[in-house]
Length: 324
Image 1 (tube, helix red, strand yellow):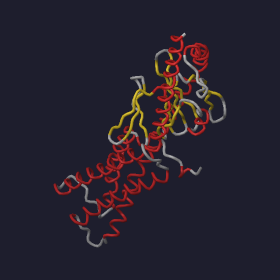
Image 2 (cartoon, rainbow, N blue to C red):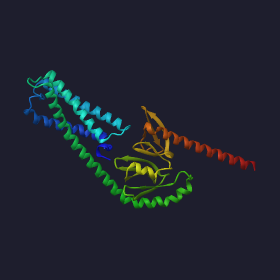
Image 3 (tube, helix red, strand yellow):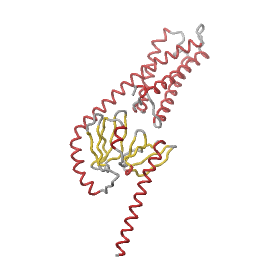
Image 4 (tube, rainbow, N blue to C red):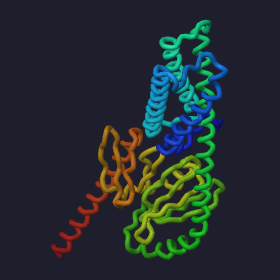
């Protein structure tokens, strides 16, 4: 798949990333304008005069509002639709265009520049805004990607050290879980998860599994061990993991989440979005997208029907014993 058609990493729309990006843009833009001002006749930023200072503050605040609203909208859309690299590039270009238009309007109406046509002024403003925003966007993007990879590497190293120990513990409990928990023909008890190279990385009982969360090229597996919810990071695409989850109690509820239908405590609607609450208080609510809502409801109804049939069979069996 071409790079421009790939989905953007999740950290790009995180609040932490957006906050650092806006702060860096403010610092870089101030430095850029201090250097650029002596060479341009169209720069009216300054603190010496009240009018210039007032419009400088107004422009900066307007730009911040545009960026915050834009990234908030991006975050909202990201939770419902896929945002590709190409879509993200067009999005940034739209931000540049809006901010440059604000600058152009202020300049034309309050700081007219004799001899400079409005189209020329708008073109220069767009070029400057693009440079000012491109450098912080690139710098923060690379730094955030580097931090994300470092965190993934540290997590992988730690998990690799704990893998053998946890694997032995899970295997030792496998027989006990099979004895205690009822088995169903249509719900295999053990799930084997492989990485991109086809290497078996985790074998886990569905009774211990809570949910999976996709993060770019990684899958985070959340499971309970010794009364604690732990996570295991697996380098693998979501689609390949889904092959291992067929005919199990794991159901996709969102493009980033797959939940264990047997662990759902309740599902609710909040601000036109549905959320799942699992039966462990330490786990935050999990969103349910519209495209997977019907599938989740059908799975919940199937479990309810199965439990009802089981109760009827038990009742019939008790009545038969009483008749004897």
